[in-house]
Length: 413
Image 1 (tube, helix red, strand yellow):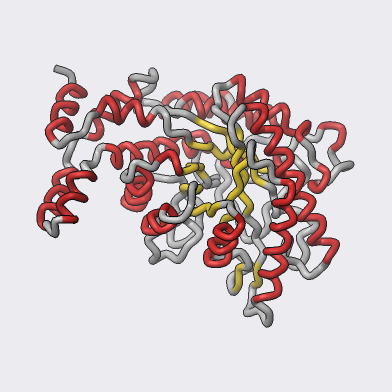
Image 2: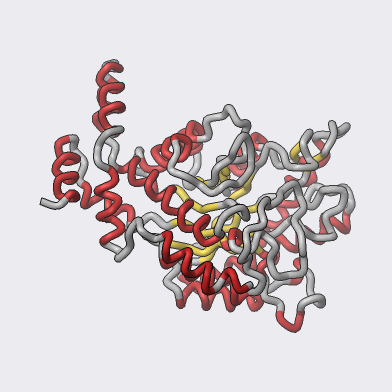
């Protein structure tokens, strides 16, 4: 009997069908962020980050051209099991001869068609899209959609509209909905005199952007944040602002687990949203003390988050995307290792006997609930994970392949 067959029998004793878990894992799409490969620089002219975010590290091999980034994404995706989507930012527009002639308020679908072709040719299930409200000279005093300057605000509103129009064409191209996430870095370094004005302007700006929303082909979420570098005292798009905004506008919230206070349990937020929203979007990352965007790992935080995603039988309500930019390690490994850590966490959640635990809880048998919780920690998830990889011609022995790619490709850049 193989190790997997033994594990299957062990899990069967606690009411878990491992074959069904593996089949379910293959159907959970994860949207892979393109910006890990080039340190969030993009191709539309910016040469550094702004807006309260930064990439740390100087590991060799950063992608410098669209061709290099596509090759790196292709390599990373080949080592990731499961269903994948590609997640683009508007700053990855391929402008060609129009570079320097058109700005973000004029972008159209044609500047992203090569990405769509790439995604289709390489087995991605779809493409998601993000307007880029940072790393641009038309950020004024750290503000975009909430700026008191009409010309500044108008530029970014038009960029948001163009982004939704581009997303609609992407959705049509794939025959499924393109997910658009709106995040802005707007805030203040020191204590503001006016907290309300910027939020009213942000509300009205997004309202105008949404006038071009094609609900048949596009889903929209808004993403909050606590603070950023240089905007430590006040963030316009806070969690309470966006939850109220999404609830009153028929869109939904994106929860980035790095965008909350270090002592908050982000996993606890999902069930509250499930009670009211048809969909929940998540950015999965690892925040070391705060929003540091380290590569995701198979730690307790990720296990708790992914358990909440799968335990209620509502995983289809979640739009799962990755978001980190770690330049201190091999960037291909940062993609692959992080995605695999998320998938291991999702699998652990699916291999947990939640039904039995919830039944004990509802009967007030908290002793049994704790017993089941502790017992499950020693069950052989590794053998089920290995079988999941084998079913897709993959294994845990992937470091050498990444190192070979580094030696032959990345090190020559």
